[in-house]
Length: 107
Length: 143
Length: 122
Image 1 (tube, each protein chain N blue to C red):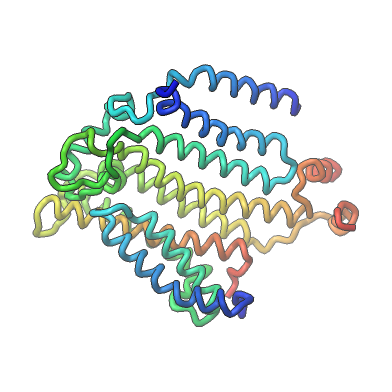
Image 2 (image 1 turned 30 degrees about the horizontal axis):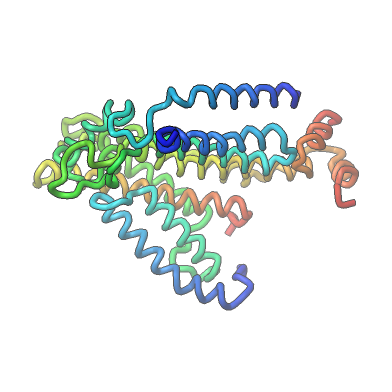
């Protein structure tokens, strides 16, 4: 199993190192990610939202619905953590003590 | 609950540093429109401040939110965010279209106030979520 | 050669960082170590997105009065997306730590082979 996984990892390494040149050039102001939607945000967002910080404008105004989803995810994660660790259920294993003693690496 | 740090040096230095962390959190939240910053960062700073304050001061902490109170606060933060959207719906706009907020100021001003309101909600949610996770992980949720 | 180093070499560094994640998840035995490897992988993805937004001669994405034009500021979109990703990764790390605590409480161990053995013999 670990052999298959390591072969898959080596394939991933090979694929990546041979296709690096297809990724967009860093530091090039005319690369693909810099030319698609971000000039629109940079040029118009201060006039449209009144906030000089483009990141805040994108985060809270243009993509406000998205951020609402993210906030809900964070709230749900906090709720899940609290509910997981607060449940008063005791483990219902009959041989738990035996198992604990048997497999303890310090013993 | 006398889980203080072991040494007097850590105790006193965190005692000094906590108000500055809180002040910096307020600055990052309020000034997040004109400079780098915003709700998530301010929430993380507040969360750290609350956790440190409860570690150092114990029961006498200034912001002693913990357990159920923190969970309720997280819900309140998300509700603030959602209610801003509902208010803009009620006044005839789309969801989270801040231009229709019922305020007597210019359109960019309304946008700025709407952004500030939702970032306040995000701050409260992130802060209390950090506190909830900390409480749950150290097993301190029962008062 | 120099063009390669200025334009593409950072991708290799980020990919090596990313590779630490699958390596740890596959080959490490302890579940906590697997979780840490997953977090390293998350950081690599975040760095990848942030690097995509860089531009030569770009300022931070806060408007300076009088300086207009898309070439003067770096791309704000990856920053806005990754800002939320960082906080969500914090929350999901909390959830997974809670799950690991429960596993430790039920089975008394966090090593994967021992854990599988105890699950099977039950």
